[in-house]
Amino acid sequence: MAHFRGEQGEERGMELFTADGYWWSRLAFQRALAALYLTAFLTAALQFRALLGERGLTPIPRFVARVPFRAAPSLFHFSYSDRRFAAVAWFGVALSAAVLVGCADAVPLWAGVLMWAVLWALYLSIVNVGQTWYGFGWEALLLEAGFLAIFLGNARVGPPVLVLWLVRWLLFRVEFGAGLIKMRGDRCWRELTCLDYHHETQPMPGPLSWFFHRLPKPLHRVETAANHVAQLVVPFALFTPQPVATWAALAVIVTQLWLVLSGNFAWLNWITIALALTAVDGHLIGDLLALSDPAERGDPPLWFTMLVLAATALVVVLSYWPARNLVARRQRMNASFNPFHIAGAYGAFGSVNRHRHEVVIEGTDDPPGTPEPRWRAYEFKGKPGDPRRVPRPCAPYHRRLDWMMWFAAMSPAFARPWFAPLLGKLLEGDRATLRLLRTNPFPDAPPAQVRARRYAYRFTTWRELRATGQWWHRTPAGAYLPPVTLETLSTTARRAGFAPPPEGP
Image 1 (cartoon, one colour):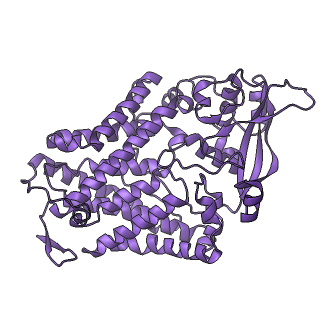
Image 2 (cartoon, rainbow, N blue to C red; image 1 turned 30 degrees about the horizontal axis):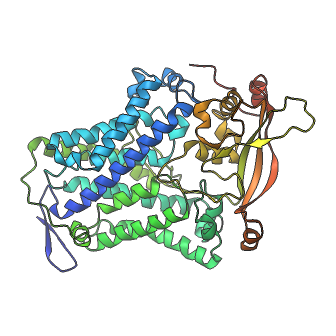
Image 3 (cartoon, rainbow, N blue to C red; image 1 turned 180 degrees about the vertical axis):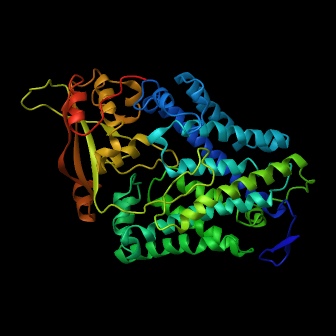
């Protein structure tokens, strides 16, 4: 029997298979994970028609026609319709909500395991056909955490020790991988100057990002150095006895909450916090929340023990690839080494932009040839547009189109599969696409022409903010795509380096 000691010196017994001292830690992790699943399924349900639907920017039917099942396992390989996708997404919302309120703990063990397994399989089906819209590291991270949650059991058994260690191994890879990619990547991380730029140039600034950017530069150095400690030193302490592991987990949580305040990173920070909760001594959580320890449970059934052992063996074997990636000279960031997204590689911001550019899409009622057409801008819900509009909070909700517009501003190559189709949808007045935007300057009829212009953005100074009320200062940086109509879109987009609009599956 292994033992851990709490702050008051009493021994925390840990059986060979289960760790009763982590009861509340598991509960906190699973409820947080259920909330993130709910957010992810809700994001899918509300955005898929415009992005992935039968008439979307990158339709799923076309994707599954060219990508085999073995490369991207998904229920939608067998049959796809927008109605089926909506059913999967909304069922995922309902099941996540049920788990969040405790239904997985109120049912027999096998049913609780099944509920977590269904959540994982449904979201895997979405991610594997999500294409560029689901190419972010937090998608694979949610799947890997969700896979491990299947084997954590429910209120009928104590948390399995092996799975708790696998969760810590995942958290270690997330944090240490992110730290390494920074030190191996942009030199500004080594020079402690990256945060002179990051708060201003990050993909989706939040309402406090302006204030973080305007902090004195010495504080930015402190921020960067603290980040290196949190990601390169603290993760090793996760594998030490209590209470050191708890303090390490709390350091991770505080660091992630700082990032939550400074920007919008979907659920990346929140799921990292959820993972860290599993390393916190459960008695500490119980004491803080004035919760009594649950009643003692019996030994887990044989079938569950064998299931946990098999899952542990699988993850240990698959961990060879991410472990090798950590020590590789050319470390990969946010990479999955198998189509089930188990034991992946993670990291963020290996390089930091020094300047911010935004693509602004405009339309006009005036036909081609009008001497001075009146252009009106489409405004997005999350990304910067109107300089007077303070950046909005949205995380953990993920505005996928807004994020991809950030990449598009860096290079048309990132937008090649979907940008011309996006303009086509605006010229058609497509309702699903317009619902992803904050404003539609043409509510009565679609515009005759649209164009895209590139602007350089920077946060205003204190003096500029007081004088103008503008959070951003922007200057024109040239045309991104010249004016087009529905008839000229395909030709013009091809000449500008974009793929032509899709013509159906």
